Amino acid sequence: MTRSVKVLLIAFTCTISGIQAQEFQGIATYKTQRKVDIKIDSTQVGGMQDEIMAMLKKQFEKTYILTFNKEESLYKEDESLAPPSAGGSMVFISNMGGSGELYKNIKTQRYVQESDLLGKMFLIQDSLKTNPWKLQGDTKNIGNYTCFKATLEREVKSVSEMDEVTKETQTVTAWYTPQIPVSNGPEQFQGLPGLILELSYDSQTILCSKISLNPSKPIKIKEPTGGDSVSQSEFDAIMDKKMKEMESQYGRDDEDGNSFKIEIGN
Image 1 (cartoon, rainbow, N blue to C red):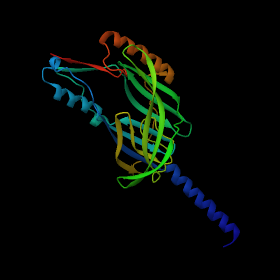
Image 2: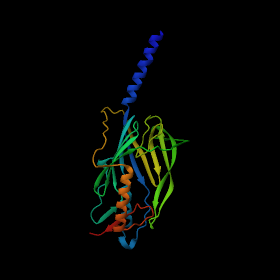
Image 3: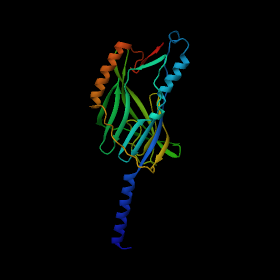
Image 4: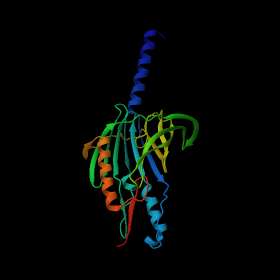
């Protein structure tokens, strides 16, 4: 084979590889679970502790869909499986806003996220944080994929009943697979040499239950556009203000500020 033919063959192979990488896309389904450890005064709920705990647990069991390609992703709750709002004689009042679609662009290192705060929609636009992952030697299989362990330490705020803000270190554990060469994952976790299939921190676990690679119907990933545009720091300031207003109105029961009020009645 002549040198010119070899050069042309290499160029052709690189072109095909580039096209395949550019077109690589997929859909991953994740399920979330969280341990519920809440003390309920039996004198206030009339023997409904088990029913309330079951409903609370159900609120934290959600299904999310991550559509992705090499550069972009869109993470959102599966609306068809979303739990109905609590109604009837039981009302749950949360002091936190609900997150909508999360768009990430790995190439430009930016994200856009919808967030509903007490009925008002915000559009958070900011730069992706660099996750300081530490690659571990542990491996395990998740479905048909061989996964590797990675961990990171991050600081999270904790607010006491006396409104004292402290910082504590939280360990995040991820299991990723190089068999899916996408540096992405659920929520705002990315930066590993493969798609994250399992993620755990605090009392929450996010586990991938289904993956579809290069589906026959092309995937379209669009940035969310609804809501008032703010940076992450601006949104955090608004959130803190609203939380203090709710604390004044409803009170707060736990030390980390993630409490809610349960009303029993007609």
